[in-house]
Length: 56
Image (cartoon, rainbow, N blue to C red):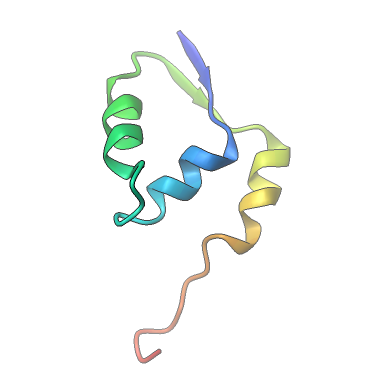
């Protein structure tokens, strides 16, 4: 099965304190198939995941 992943689950996965993190993590680990992230979703995520230097 192919699963199309929208922006909200990716945001939840980016923050272990997000209330949806455990549910999304479990769900995506059980998918037996391909996960697809459409290009517009990756553009939405552009500002959501920022890598900060270790000293910040």
